[in-house]
Image (cartoon, rainbow, N blue to C red; front, top):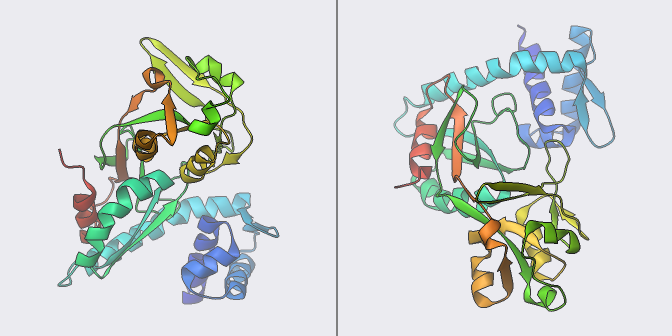
Length: 297
């Protein structure tokens, strides 16, 4: 393949992964017009349209999706081989991209990276906070983080945090004018702060269990967010109830700022796990990061 065609292909993959010319340009450290030109040149050489151009984002055409699905894993494999060669150096070097929800980033990943990164100045870690379920290889990630260890067959999972329990909380001021719910069904009479899920665009249904009963509850309220920390701020401000990780709110509950309810209905979930493809040997940088993140028993 000609060098310019290969370069344009790399640009196209970045646009497909970011869904936006400007973000792709920032990722590649080039200008937005250069990215747009490279994609147009690739389309001209191939004789097909690869992307639908909109004012704020970019989506793939059928031909573009086919090219992306076929080529992205191959480029990922090339990157892996280059990482393997870099492992022959005297010190580990490499860039590791991880997708995770905001709670995982703040509660687990970053606190451990604070100690890890100074030890390995040539390792760069990129943390992308999102609630979408993504194909990590196709989207250019090296790993992802989510609750539980049940994964696709081609993935390896490593526990990086202990089991976690969610809890329903509201501010003391909120409960001064609202009754405390005794069952999940009572939530229909309460203002609740919803979480928008990126994968399908729907709202997260609050999950409860008690004995042999399991209930998924749709709630409603004045505001919707796409991350846990904004929900927490809205709960603190008295706008309604939130369904949040217990460790995220325990200080507020201990101080009396927030009140925890429905505790006997809130299940305990398997903790956060790092997952990554098992089809290739992790680079030295990745292996060191896994060791640093692994939950100690």
